Length: 368
Ligand code: GDP
Ligand code: MN
Image (tube, rainbow, N blue to C red; front, side, top):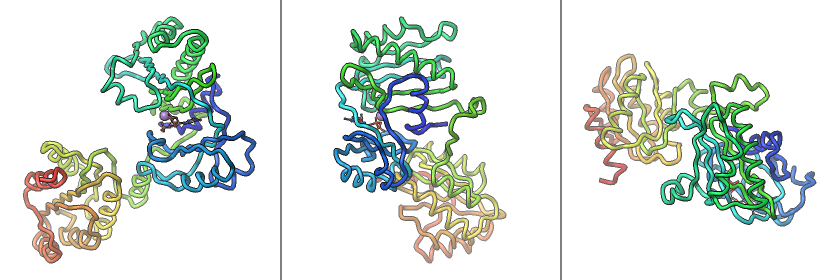
């Protein structure tokens, strides 16, 4: 379970990790009642990273500027999530930006502490392009995280003097938070030098789902995306992935094999939706609307094996809700002929062979 930045920072404060003074608002008018010193930083509270790059983080020197930014960010979409809350904090004057995290390394079966002097940017990129800039230590579960580990990591990323002392304290506190709250990830990026101290500018905490029940005091966040919630409300089972081909099928087995066959031909599924048995024209139309709305979808693959589900209903659903992206349809089974005729009349070819159809949709997104 992911925590929002403001929730993670409440935990940080509880564990004595220094954070900026701030508060959460839901509308621009709430800025008026705040007793915070300018300049302020306004931060979109969504459960996705890279908010800065997406325009979800803005500095404001005056109340007018703060209002203007608040109006712009609230309601904005970041990677498919609508911004409903803003963290408003006293902006820090940032010197250098470091990175510090504890993460469960499933391969090693251990917690790993990670630190870097290349903070503030996407750590996965640093790991790829300049792995020498990342200091790591895998922790023995019986020994845990000791201050010599912290001093070693801090030294490796170039910290000394009072900053190193600060780093050791913060790292110990973050480790304590991680293990006490059953987190699988705790991350500070950036951990910034402000004056002669270190300050957690950002906060990311993911609680192990299997341990959430042990922490009744933690906030309960809805893990589903907006599209997943919409699908659930319509009784459709829908799951998001991160590729570019949207997939609709009928029946869990067919949908799973469709994912496999798309992957086999080198395609990357963006999501998948199972319209289930006996899907109506309306179900199908709604399914197309949901899968195609996900940002990053470049093509749609509809794979239907009619049984209780009738191909003519499916075809009517497709023509009622033509997707905004290119589509490949494979249709066979009950009322196949009628279904094909309906599609043909709308200029849509229906494939019989799922492999041929999968190859076609993969070649569409690859531009071949
Ligand atoms: P993320 O983009 O979702 O990781 O959000 P962050 O909280 O990490 O903010 C992104 C970037 O915005 C940081 O790396 C900083 O460069 C900048 N930023 C955030 N808060 C402040 C602040 O209080 N003062 C200044 N000067 N910059 C900030
Ligand atoms: Mn960050």
